[in-house]
Image (cartoon, rainbow, N blue to C red):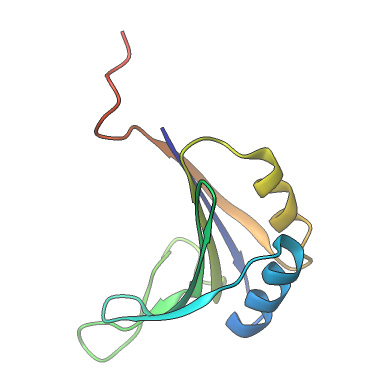
Length: 116
């Protein structure tokens, strides 16, 4: 299984959230630039990754699209991906004021057998 969590905020800028999460989790984020996602920040953790990015991303028609359109009020997103559920990782972002848990998804990986 792969465990994904999405958090959002309209309180903090991308830079502020990078600083807050770095301080809380002791991580170093690297700035990345993608045609699809625009500028985002990525930190690798022992069993996964954490990404911070704006919800508005560059669209094909020179207008921004929302990465998470079901939450338009969230201007900045924090995305976590781990191979299994990590309660400690979930507790720390939840402790950041102004950061709201928006979504949780689990997905079967290609190498996992189908349940019996």
